[in-house]
Length: 217
Image (cartoon, rainbow, N blue to C red; front, top):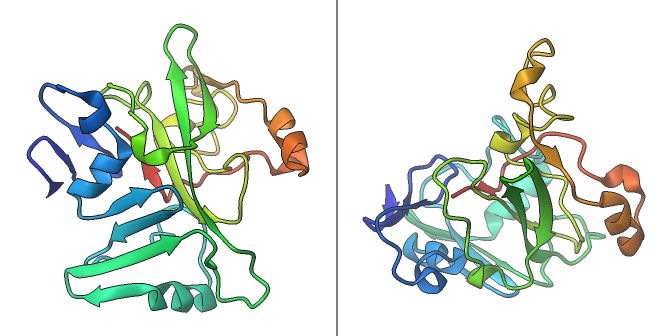
């Protein structure tokens, strides 16, 4: 367990907030969570405490990171032993390629609507002050995606807990095709509109499983 008695994580890709929340705008924000695990989150920058853990989990989920980019990312880590940190800042590169575009710290949230079993995606303007939903199960708890990449209006990543229940995508997340009763939530995000606003092809909308940066409360 890393954090405090009331706010911590168990290496399970979830934010655990326990007890009575007196002030949600102080206690239940992403910025406060990053602070208690010895990291930092601000507009335009993020510090991730990595300790002695492996930096990459693409053997389990997420995007495959090639050898050259692994070396580049490892070079960005400061400190040693348990006191190792990965600092990310807007304008820096997320790749060792010479032609790589400047990257930005970006946070996307899928929020669930319990009234109609739907969910939709939003890009956060002020991630540090975002107050996550007060649910112990996910969904209806939030799916929160952190990315350090070239600027975008939406992410193609989705948390496993949401993917397993999505009416259109649950099979690709591992639900047997003959058990559709498990797939009962729908993504209502207008990706066509977001794609047009961003000037990209709608085919770039979410279509495959990836949840390497998942944080769910």
